[in-house]
Image (cartoon, rainbow, N blue to C red; front, top):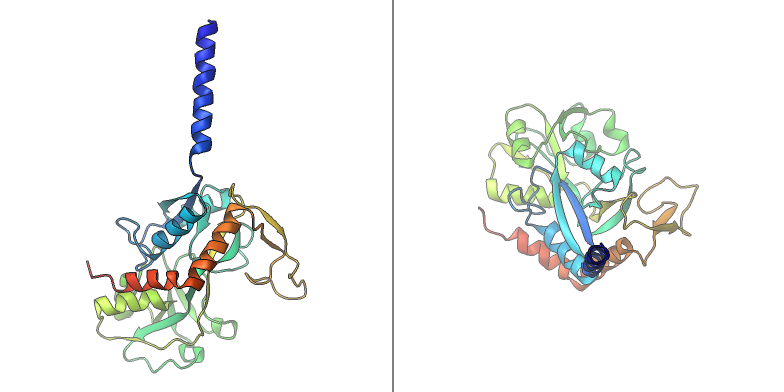
Length: 274
């Protein structure tokens, strides 16, 4: 009996040492449909996996990619089963479950319409139109014009399907990330559509880091202005820089400043068509 007890204790101790020796695992969640060049639906390859795998390696952890339907993914983020969503636009509904942080990339949005649509030089030119929007995505139209837009929400809407629906007259326009739209535009060369110049300056893209992640640790933000609206740049909390999440964002910033991030982006923009 005593020998068996000693063996059990030794096995438990060995398992504990093995767990301590393993690198922590950071879970990135993404919906099931692809968003090239950021992420492929077959093997998860793309900008996101390469960028965050390298960043994780530098802070002593590994990256795991989990693909789930959008609703299930948001539940997992809220429960801390997924640590972060790599490209997440801030809004008031999402704020309780995630801290919004620069993800190391930049973005701006562009509009696609049928070729017969007049030039879009202002959001006013989209007034009274029907926008195709992926179910659950935030409104990308600035406030003064939102009330003039009708929205048709489509579950699991990807870019190729958006092109087809706009061509078929199921909606009047689709607004999305410029890098993604240009990637598909160059490869699909859709006829009868127009990709309009962006109406926005480039700005930092954000990730949503789960407030229930085991790696989340925050502290009061001394730069927070209570008299200003909440936003990713004006929030009562900030990451503890010594936490794994804090070290991840610092590493992403260093990769951006060194030019490594831009080289990753360019590599996937030039990737051959499958």
